[in-house]
Image (cartoon, rainbow, N blue to C red; front, side, top):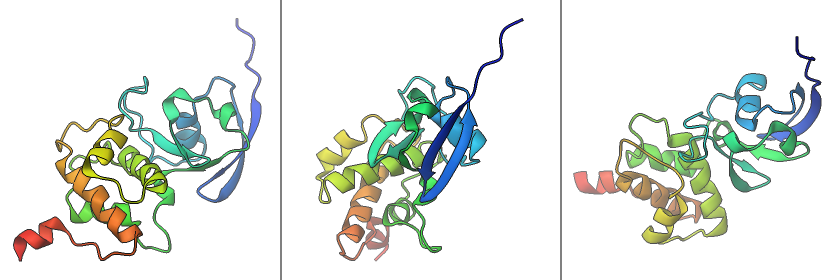
Amino acid sequence: MSAPVEKMTVSLTVNGQSHTVEVEPRLLLVHLLREDLNLTGTHIGCDTSNCGACTVLLDGIQVKSCTLLGVQADGASIETVEGLEQNAQLHPLQEGFWQEHGLQCGFCTPGMLMTAKALLAENPSPTEAEIRRGISGNLCRCTGYVNIVKAIQYGAAKLRGEAGVSTQEAARA
């Protein structure tokens, strides 16, 4: 019979809301978010940090939450994909993914969105090559990345205050 695992108290802010939870020291951040806070938008893809589906922002820095312990996030501010939409309005990146058909099955989308948000916070006007390099740690098995890149370009333009013009709409005109 094994000894019971002592739990630790973790206090963190997720999408602007403060939370205090009791967790086992070995619990991964992705499981804390999904199971303890019921924020299931952060996906579990590979559990090895290869796919990027679990990407969240920790104090503004993108991290793969499958490789970080929940206790390591104590005192941190975390943003998940659920925090992008504000006042029933899609975030410009979400709008870009919709307008530019940047998702198919949608499994990689939460991680792609959070990675793109971190990229645009650092570089509001990235080139196509910089976007491709920025999302290189996120795998998509469906799209071939062309529309994901267009979606990020659309979102970047909207965030810079420029009118987002969908390449899909332009093709129909």
